[in-house]
Image (cartoon, rainbow, N blue to C red):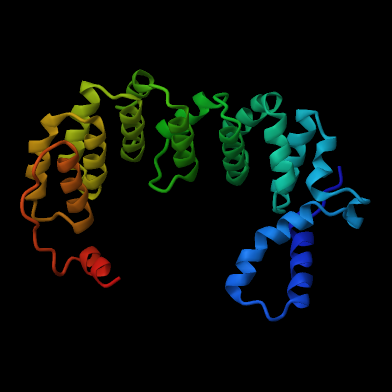
Length: 273
C-alpha cells in the first residue's frame, strides 16, 4: 500500500492560497481555514490520479487493510489523514475487534493506542471496555494519558461498573483510585464509594476539590457537615476552597462567609485576569 502524506499536500495547498491572498489578516486566515480544507478535500487531486482526497480511502472495505493503513501512518509518524479516520469509523463494527486489540497491547505505540480509543469512542463501541478497565486500574502515573482516555471512554458508555471497579480498588495506586471513584460516582456509586470519597477529602490533600465535586454529584446531604469542616482547614488552597463551597451549595447547605485568600497564588492569579 502506498502512503500519501495528506497533511503535507494540504499545507502546500494552503501556502498557495495564502500567497494568492497576501492581504488576509490572521483572524481572516483562521476563518478561511475550514473553507480551504473543505475545498481541498472535495477537489480532484492530480497526485491521487484525479480522485478527491475525501473519497480516496472509500476503496477500502476490509478492516485488515484499514487497520494496516492506520498502523503504517502512525509508525511513520505521518499525520493520520482525516478521510482514513472517517472511513474506519464508517466501516465501524468489523474494525472494532482489531482496534480493541491495539488498545490492549502494551507493545504498541502509545499514540496508536490513543487513536484506537478515539476511533472506538466515535463508533460508540464497547469492544475495548475490559482493556479500558485494565488501563485505569493498573495506572500508576498521575499523567497517564491512556488511562485518562480510557476513563473518558467508559464515562461515555454510561454504565454502572461500580462492582467491577471496586473489586480492584484496594490494589490500585492512588492515581488509579481517583479515576475509579470518579467512574463509580458517574455510574451511581453506593455507600462504600461515599465513604471513600469522604476519606479522600480528609487524606488526599492535593485533590480536596475533586472529592468535593464528586460528593456533590453523589447528592448525599450527609456530606454537608464534613465539607463545612474542610472549609476551615488552614492549608486549603483557593481553588479547592471554591470547589468545596460550591459542593455545599449544590447539596443544599450554607457554606457561610467567604474567607480571605489574599496572598494565595491561585487567588491572586484569578484576581489579576
